[in-house]
Structures are given as C-alpha cells and as structure tokens.
Length: 216
Image (cartoon, rainbow, N blue to C red):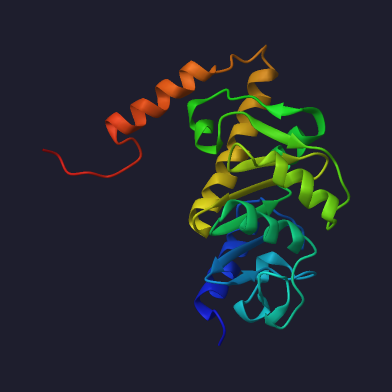
C-alpha cells in the first residue's frame, strides 16, 4: 500500500485533533510528506473517525495516486507550504480560540516566551474564501517569519518537520490564543519585545531547555 505508515499517522493525527477539540466534524485538515509524495486528509470525512485508507496520497502537483476519497479542499495551501518552506507536515484547524482571535486581531502578540517557538508574533492572514489559490497565497505570505499563522475569520495553521511537531505547534497556538484572551479580559497584556525573545532563545540554547539530558 502506498505510504501506509504515513497515512496511518495522518489519520491518527486527525483523530487526535478532534479529541483535543481543535476541529469539528469535517472541518480542518492535516498532511505529511514522505519523499515526493504527500498523505493528506480527505474532503468530507469526519476527522474523529478517520481511517488510514480514506487518507489521500498526492504528488507535488496535486495529482492523486492513492486513497479512497479525494483530498481536502485546502490542498493548494498544503502543497504551497511544502514548496515554499520544505516542511515535513502541515496542520490546519478551526480551533475555537485561534478562530476567535482571527476575528478581532491583526496579529497575536508574543505575550509568553513559548510563543517564540512559533516565531514570536503570529500574523493574521487576510480573509479569502476557503479552498482558493488566493487563500493559499496570503497564508503562505503570513508564514514567512514563523511556523504558525492565523487565518482571518477561518482558523489557524502550523507546519513542522513532522506531524508530531506540527500538532504540538497547533496546540501551542491555541494555548497562546486563550492566554491572550484571558489576559486581555483583565487589562492590557505585556508583550515581549525582540530583545526579550532573543534572550529567551539564547537561554534555550544554554540550558538545553525542553530536552532530556543526563545529569553530569
């Protein structure tokens, strides 16, 4: 079977997206690249129940080479991320907090140092109709300086070297959006400037933050 293991990973990621409340019904999509082929969630399928055989496989031009169902309507967006950013995986959701922030913000400020993992400030791409080349174009531009973007009146998108990283970034984006919402309801959130973000990155390197290493 073509890319069976990768398709199983995509289906498992889709089911987790639903379990985490990041998607509802058939909304949202995920994909992963292996070599010149891309496994991507199909259009019209409930992500909570997705089976690997339903996951489509396409070539870099979007031609379908395997899968029981047609690929997501956002295929152009996924293919664009792979072409421009050489990503290993892409996750797009209509997560509640990310979508809510996309309705009111021009960008999600870097209110916590963990958001530096997404590039710091997360831009909001202008609204364009779903599944269109125009949407793909503005979202790809919004991803220029990071691995996450909000999509106005639509949702959020992240990419990473693999599905695990892309999904963790989506969860971080949703957490950051909720954090900002909670802080903004109390007052004006403090924002980390470029110097603070650079200091964080230096400390991550010095302390091996987020990694497991033996005690010496």
